[in-house]
Each structure stands twice: as structure tokens, then as C-alpha cells.
Figure 1 (cartoon, helix red, strand yellow):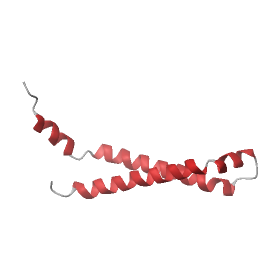
Figure 2 (figure 1 turned 90 degrees about the horizontal axis):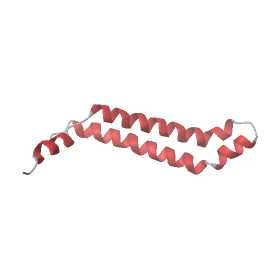
Figure 3 (figure 1 turned 90 degrees about the vertical axis):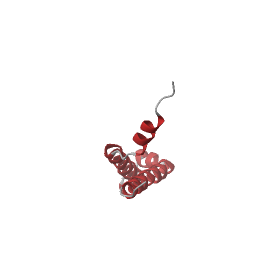
Figure 4 (figure 1 turned 180 degrees about the vertical axis):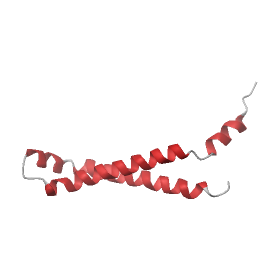
Length: 85
């Protein structure tokens, strides 16, 4: 006996506001972490900790780009939720 595929496909296309909020939360948090890692060494006193944070700029850029991508995905989902399918 074959399972009813129409019920599963409809559930996958319905908007999930909680998942959208979580996506936005992750995006904002990652972008904040990325900015902190990139800008933080400018405000720190010269020390070993400052050098360590400054050397992890690649991680900061990655977090900033990933956070921005999550925020863009949230915006696209919000825009597409109002359109009929």
C-alpha cells in the first residue's frame, strides 16, 4: 500500500512562523558575532588576547556572511509567504 504523498507535500509547503523566527534569530546572532570578532580588536588594549582575536578574522567574516545569508533567507520566506502557490 502506498502512503498518501499529497498530505506530506502540502505540509512541507505551509509556512512555519516558528522556524522563520529561529532562522532570523540565528542570522542576527551570527552577524553580531562576526562583527564583534572583526571590530573587537580595534577597541582592545594590546595583548595576547587581542592578537588571538585579530588572527581569527576569517572566522569573523564567515560568521558575518552566514548570518547575513540566514537573514536574507528569512526575508525571502516572509516575502513568499504572502504569495499564492
